[in-house]
Every structure is written in structure tokens, then in C-alpha cells.
Length: 112
Length: 117
Image 1 (cartoon, each protein chain N blue to C red):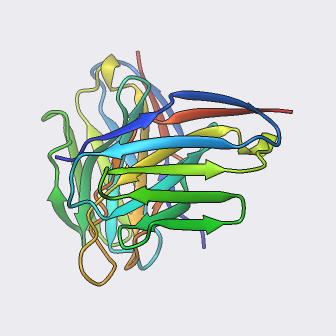
Image 2: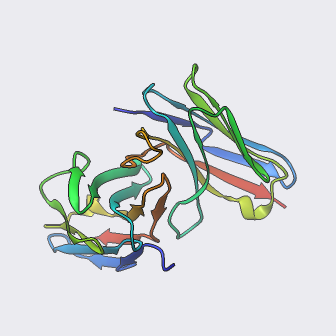
């Protein structure tokens, strides 16, 4: 099993640029989550999807953030325009019929 | 919403000693409590979990205990080894009937465990 696959692993971008993070969940999993991790705020749930439908996006910090899941095997998290305070590690995670949530390796974003 | 408090924030032990990390939660409806280990540069990985109908669960050197009345749960690592050094997170969520849930986990702040050889 390949696990949850995220890309890019590292991204450095200038303030104001658009950032797109990508995720491929584990095959057969029907729930997908985007988390953000920072030293100050720890692990925060941004949004999660069930069967490709956004269930709860209350954690999305503001309108600059958007997430889509066009099919069961792909999701994107977009930040437009990016700001330095968006610098963080963004994790995608997926879950099947059980309780265990599997995390990807993360996308390390630096906005300068 | 749910709030999970985790202590201590850092923990340093000698190899072979035991380590205990404690968490409290606020939502009495929470009934699923996983623990994740995060190594440097990697994503969190589940190491053990417990449901609210169980008071204790063990898996080799790690164990988790749950006190529903007090709304707290703990991770116990015995005979610690240097490879146990990592950040540990507790979490809580509501698991619906049938043992599954949407999995909206609320995480604690994390504990940096260092095991000295």
C-alpha cells in the first residue's frame, strides 16, 4: 500500500503567489482530511470530505483557502493569495471504514 | 467543540525508564481516543487507540488507560528506547454506531519525548 501521497513535499513561494497542494488518499478510503501544523497552534483540522463531499470546512482560516475533491483519488488545497503567516506543514489524511486515520508525509510550505 | 489538553509538553527520560503522557478532554460525547507518534519530517502515525467502552489497552511496551468519569486518558510507555524519541499526540473524536466515524479528530498540543541512551 502506497499510503497517502502528497505533493509537493516542499514549497517556497513569494507572498501573493498562488499555492496548490495535492493529495492522493489511500485507495478505497472514503474520508479525506486536510490538517495544518504549526508550532503555535499545533495540528488543526482545516476541512474534511466524506465520499468527495465537504462535510465541515469550519477550520478553513479565511476565503484565501479553498479545497476541492473532484474524485475519490484526488484532492487539492489552494491558497490564493499566499501570506507569510500561511507558512506551515500541511497534512492530508484519509480514512476507510474503520477509525484509523492515515497521514501523508506533509507538504512543507514557506511563504516569504 | 471538543478541547483536548495534553501534558507535559516535553518529557526527558533515561533509556529503560517509563514515560507517561496525560490528556484531558471536554466533550463527554467523545468516545474514541487515538495516540499518534510523529517523527521528525514525517506525518503522525497511529500507535494505539482506545474506545470508551474499554478502560485499558496494551500493545507490547505501550498501554493506554481511560477514565471516562474524569474525562482523561494516558499513554504509558515502558522500557523506553532511544527510538521512542518523537512527538506524541493524543486526540479525541466521536465514533458513531458501528465503529466508524467521520473521524474529526481534535488533537492535543503534543509532547516531545526524548529518551537518553
